Length: 558
Image (cartoon, rainbow, N blue to C red; front, top):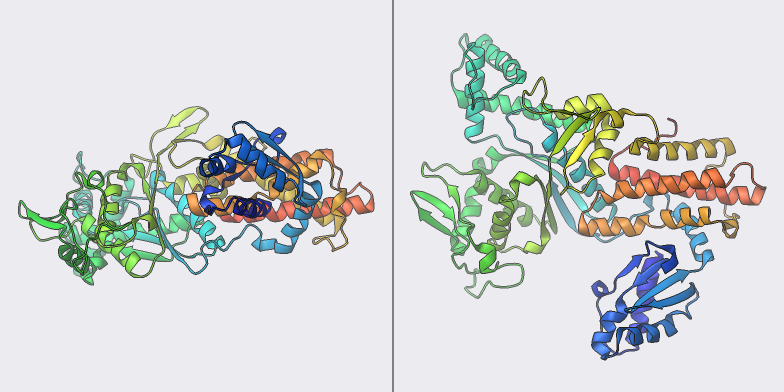
């Protein structure tokens, strides 16, 4: 990457100042405005603090060395000490060949090589169909897992099935009432799916035993297992496949919950109160060798631990959801995860600091644990807000949306938004076959390139292409866009901002459409035609790899 080369160049220049500086301190960014060059850095401001020079003095001194490098067209120093890099056209032109050489691997990196990552997402409420609020986590988690894999991580996509607790018994009770023809009251589970399940489960019991079961916990457990199959099926329809599905009941059954709580007991962070056992992280805990455990990543501050007391064993001796979640996260780290990412709905925000506290108390590095919280989705049709589903009764199901607009639109429309923002999902726009629909616009760019290459009968340009013929602003702008993918993937593998991929895909598509409209490909002279075909193919590779990371099809025909 050109950006990597600039960072290396800066390191060499800084060594002349005779002090060390970390890679994290070197911030090289793409310039949003071409008037400020291709890249910019604020490194001179950091150097000035070490040299006691002004930022402008440091910037000018560094620029004297940097401007002599062979890939630099020119450098500019701007207040209060920014250095702007203008890269030679020939360097950009050669990027086309780099894309062609790497092909399906273009955009990948080795950031996570030799490391394991575990990403948990969706893990929907088990007592009903998959609603779109939970479904939003599907594309986010799946695309993040793909980015991490593209960055060298060994990734596990995980789902936790909450098949125990009062909610399961409550569902069973609602089904028994529905089967008996009794009116479902406020607090009972509602919707036509309740009657469907009641008929299916209780009829099966009657056929098997001759009587209808009245054990709400048994009926409820069977119901959530049936619903799980539906949820996983809906996830598959959305292009989401899990490597492991963990039933919550298994943690207690195989003793993982007890093991985790025993470890916390040894750490001194459990206490008895009101007949129950509580996780109390404000109680000082100790390491196994009795030395201070206040090491980096292990001991949260007093502020961090404040008000985190949580019940883990109820007064009746049963485990809480939090206790089983402790076991789940202990298992992840115990099995050697280098990165653990949980993707929750925003209503779980209070759960996050408790998990951070317990991970620290267990002795693991909290910096390896990350949580992405996403907001809810509202649906619109012709500016009218849609409020509920026929089957679910109180919410829109994922299945209904997938069946109406398709997998690609669902994923792209979800991933267009920062998880922290609410979504107004426009069902009419998602179905539209025009440039107004962002996913259609991007896919059409890929299909258009496929058509050009098919007509040219050249799928892979040969080595004799003269890339120096790509001189127009449309060509250079497109090259600069496609060269961003490796930088973007590496950044997302660290900041998890997968929504940036959709914006990038649209920018590449937009740049290609402008190139196509202003730079004839097949009608050009032979040498220029070959150069433009090579650029078209490189753009196709870039779009395809980006869409694959998003879990969206890259069609050759529309």
